[in-house]
Length: 71
Image (cartoon, rainbow, N blue to C red; front, side, top):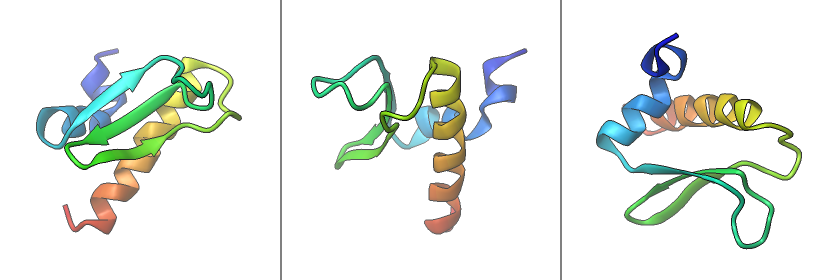
């Protein structure tokens, strides 16, 4: 499956709003993060077990972010 089809909100984010970081952060609490020029918009919590789960959670969070911001 094409990434843009599986994760349309993430694709929209990286093509026009900000960027995504994948990998454990310095605190070890976040596997996947969405950022914009203002800083961290969303970060996965320690309950996310796999990268796939983290990406699915990010997709949902960004979908909600776009809705809340009228986009």
